Amino acid sequence: MRTVDGIDWNEVVEDLGPALLRYFLAAGFARASASDGVQETLLRLVRLAKEGEYDPNRGSPRMLAFGIARLVKHEFYRKVGEHDLYGDAKEFADRADSVSAFAPGESAASSDALFAERQSAARLREVIGMLEYPVREIFFLLIDEELKLEEIAGILSIPVGTVKSHVHRGKEKIKLGLKEKV
Image (cartoon, rainbow, N blue to C red; front, side, top):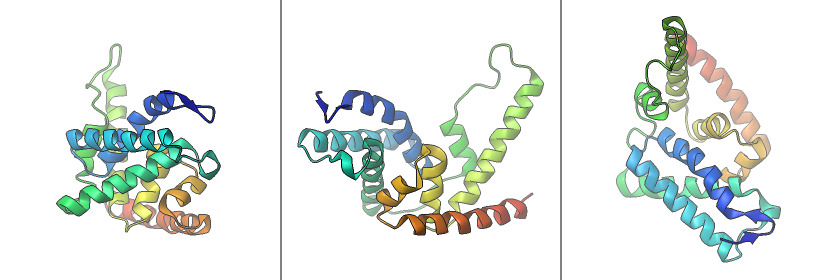
């Protein structure tokens, strides 16, 4: 593929693949469906670039890709229904991080610490998964994809101030949710 507006789209696609896979897995997609979602998102992204529809002044390729991924996700749920969007938190942690029990040279103590960390991460995902839309989506984009608030606002087509408000109120709900099941 050619470079458009100084952007190497092959590099963009290579960089975004794993991030998009995490996004679809966090949305509750099975691994095969998540891979299909990534492929569809990247195909649409490349098509937009080839057709000259990408305007770098309106956002980064990453922002555009996550906007497309969001659309692909919603199209999928319109077709099959939106049951259990975020799935079981433990199942997600297992899918998202398929590292074996012990890495070479790892001790049982460090393995216990890793297990506790994964349980905490799974619990956090469970609490975030219970938040209402769009707060839930904002937090997954912040945590998993490390997008800026401005990029999230562009993806969700809402003002940055609204994103900030959702983050502030969401943090309070997450704190309460984490305290409830301690």
